[in-house]
Length: 118
Image 1 (tube, rainbow, N blue to C red):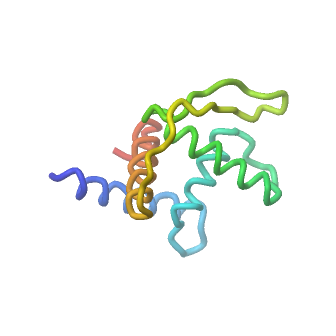
Image 2: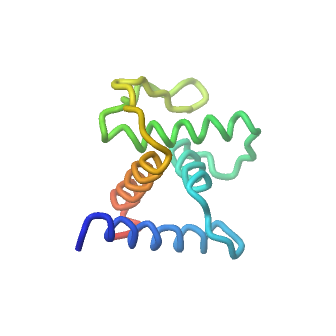
Image 3: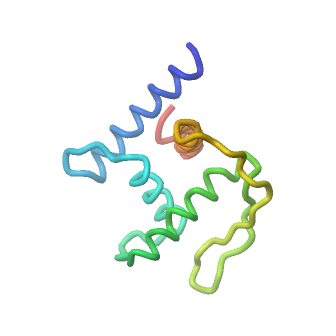
């Protein structure tokens, strides 16, 4: 099976699983899934987040997702338990479609690691 087809199938499976669990009938989009990963990485599930905190959660997720690719490296947890990452390598310029594929691949790999999908 080609890598692109496998990624597409795993992505669709993942969207279905997460949408069933966290949405009310609508498929979650890429940003919503990134947000959920940020909450997972922070580990504070029953909290309500302000807009700037939601953006920080998405940043945490992106750093965590791109860490295996060598773009970020975990540094430390601050006094409130928020993880901090440092940039190891700048992301190359990517077109919007390329960014989307990279993030979907990173998300699929994250959930393969967590054994939510196979």
